[in-house]
Structures are given as C-alpha cells and as structure tokens.
Image: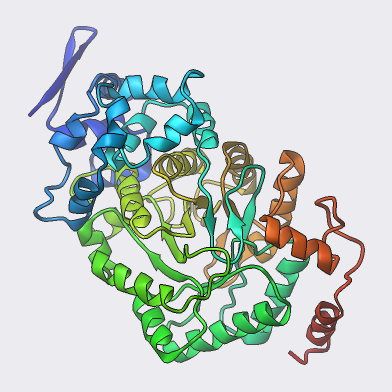
Length: 465
C-alpha cells in the first residue's frame, strides 16, 4: 500500500509504512548509510505530516516485519494488551502526542498504556515530537525495579560503576571500584566489560566483585558483561552471578548475529532466578542496546535505526529487567554523526523505553572520531536528568581505557545530583552515609567512618590488593 501526500503542488509517495517511518525520522547518518533517509527537509516534514494523521491501529494491522519470519515481531504481536490499548485505540499518531502531553492525562493513565502501545507506535510518535516533548513525557513515566536496592524512584539518580581495565587486572579494577564508591557511584550496578570473555577470566572478575560487595556489605549488585552463554555456564558452576547481561536488538536476525534468541534469554533468566541472590526483588536482567546495531548486522529489513531500537525494547521488557541502557554514541559517527544526532537519539531512546515500561538508563557517550565533545555530553546528561533518567555510567575520568570511548564520570553524577537535587537509591544512600562517604546531606563527606573501607584504601595505596 502506497502512502501519498501533496505539498505545494507536489505529490510525495511512500511505498509502505516502514518507508513513511524512515523518511519521518530526524536526520541521522545510520539511515543515510542504509539509503532510507529523507532526501530533503521538505520530504521529512511531509512524511511527518502524513505520519501524524495515521491511526495507531495501522501498526497492528501492518507489521513492519512478518511475524512468520521474525520472532521479535511475534513477541510484539503476542504481548500486545488490547485492554490497555483501548483508551487510545481511536487515536492517530498526532493525537497520541497530544494525549501524552495533555495536563488532563494523568501520569497513571500514561503508565497504564505501556503494554497497550507497540514499539512501532512509540517510535512513530517520537518522530513528530520536539526534544522538550520527549523530556516532558519521559519525566512522567516512573519505572521502579529491585534486586538488592530500589532503582527508579522519583527524585533519585543511580549510576553504573564501570571499572573496566584493558587487561582485566584485578588490582586495577579494585582500585577503580573503590574510587567510584568513594564518589558515591555504583548503586545501579558495579559492572565490568571484560577484556576477554573466557569463563575462567569472567569467573575471577565475578568473585572479585562479590568479595568487595560482601566484605563491605554494599546494597548493590554486580555484573560482568560477558555473553549470556558464558554467564549460563558459570551459573551452572556455582559462580556468584547477580545480574545476567546481554546486548539485544530489534530483529530476530540482528539478535542471531549476537548469538542469542528469546529462548536463550528465557533460560538464562530462569537459571538466575533459581540462585535467589536478590534481597529486595527479582529484577535481574541487564540489557544494552543502541541505534544502528541491526544495520551493522545487515538485519534491519529496511527499517530505520530508531524504530529498530524501539523494537529491541519489546525484547527487554519481556524479561522484567533491572536495568536497560542505550549506549547511544558508542557505535560511531557512521550511525550518529555528531553531538546533535547523539543528543536527539539519547532523548528518543529514553522516551521510547520509559513509555514502554522499561527502567531506562543511558550511557552518555561518544567515540573520538565522532563530531562531538564533552560539552555535547554535558548537554545530554543534563537533559536526561530533567527527563528522569534512571541511571547513567560512572567511568574513571569519563575515559574508558578498555573500550576506548568517552562516557560520563563519577564527578558527572555528583554534578547532576547536585544541580537537580537528586539522590542515590535509598538503600545505597543509607550505606554511603553510614560509611561516611556522604555527609547525610547528599554531599561528599570530609572523611571515612568505616575502618574496613579505610583499610581497603590503604591496601590499594600500598599495592597489596
């Protein structure tokens, strides 16, 4: 079915629904690389105009990828809640935007439709929204998850302490962990990207993190971001696995390129649940996503990068995760060319994830060959703070020496908490105060109160850890 729209005496034709979505997307290099982007701002505006007039029901009637050939499409179809969709079922895409922004729509009503909207609906409405619209709606969506602490409460901002090391040196990683803890970082997770994915190496890292958490009685969780099959093997060996990590994408073929499918993720979750390591709740999956991953695998089916990204969130929410984050600028300028595109994509991803009911964080980041700098990241960081982002990354000096990209630092989290009046997860905040890391007023203290933590710092200084 072709979609047409006339403007200034010229008729624009779009071959199908995914073409309308692609042409309506704000400019990004991934869609240009795929050859599906609008060729002019006028064509983009016409596509957005046409998209705004489309009924939401069309996304149920015309799946972008046939469920017969794509398990993500089947999941979207089978998990769609018709009763939750009913209050907005008569709306167009443009009317959904107005409904989300209206003062007469309560936050509770927005939360109630999260299983009634599909990723394609959410992606569509995001394409006709300004940045401030994305921020305003995302802030209204509260998503709370629990494992050893409580993440996503209003007025809170958590952090992933990311102590990566280029050789997985245990002493270097321990130093970064303690550094982050002393700046109040780590309540979302202490999570390591291993330099090598060998089971023995990953197991050593798991035991290191578990020892730190248990020794200092820290109300947080650990994760070594190995492939899910490695984590499964280690859980069966009895390794201390808290969270199960996996990168995911929005099509079956893209997930296959990661070496995963839905059944494997379900098996990993059930295995982790049986360990019963959570004390506050059983949200124990950790997913990372990013615009362009399906294109990288040549598995995008002609769908634009942002819509593919939103489809990945259908995979994530199926498994009740503790954490989901878009690694927004990590793939590179081939997909998000500059600071403007990275900022827009970060706000889109956060909005789409929150509206679909996910605990969204963001790796506010860029690679050194992108047309971006730390000021761009400061802008995105601040905007996400206003939008109610659940958590950000905490990387020593904002420079990940293993993955070789720029992210947010321990100091960035302190900045955002200070200017926005945000606090860590409540259980973690209480621990920070008891240890003397915080002073009871959400600020760094002048001195530690914990003898064990003091001794750990001295051991690192002496080089005996």
